[in-house]
Image (cartoon, rainbow, N blue to C red; front, top):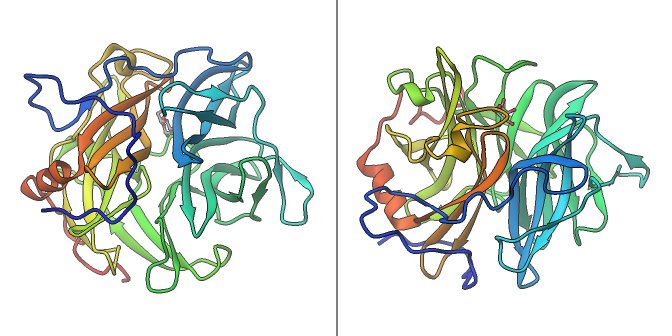
Length: 339
Ligand code: BMA
């Protein structure tokens, strides 16, 4: 039996698997949970992060404004489904307490470590994409750390605790455009400022087309007795453009650069109209999960077609079992990754 190291979340958003559904994951019947034009300034809210907070939920949302610029907005919810999202973007302060706004900000992730919330996002560093990192204790004052990473990088995802004394962050170095390559790496830091011990975690898998072009970490890894459960996205370039699907992997608990298992098939791929039709068709892009350690229920929050926010449900023990039973490592995955 898979043991989940985490907290109980009895009010997790949840629906049981519909009768007759043979899939590992099933979609919320009222998807999408965030429709087009959700606030006066926002054209589309998607690829966003949520976390339990104060008996309800807090979220940091990617809002593409009606002038098509990318911003982060704060939102709150009693049930994780109906969200009250600020119309104004999050106002950051730098570490000296002076206002600082990134030129653009997108694809946030959110984690709580030792009582403090940390936000990762894709940020502009002199106009080039890299990982932004910031913190808040109360979702009222937000402090942005000075350029945490060099360009070009995306999909920064912190583990939910230190490992062997250091903070650990997954990322996907790449280039400055809609990059045609990208593998997942891991970096360590004693203080969230100085990063090193960079290692390769996981490469694209060219024998499984859905993850053959680039891959990137999705939600915060979940600690289990079988390893860190990592939900990630994989991309294939078709004659009609990119298609973003979702896969799962298990990473070694003590040495997370070692991949123990990863799925050969995807576990979610664009199928529903809100995933296949939108601003960018054929995108399922996971950025967050909610997890009830008591029951193993998992709610995966994903951006759909760069237009909507949607939820898929599953059981962690079933996802772990599926990942093991449908494993396809590529050369290098099971190495420590430091060479
Ligand atoms: C990636 C990121 C995501 C987006 C995806 C599909 O490069 O920019 O934010 O969902 O492309 O457009």
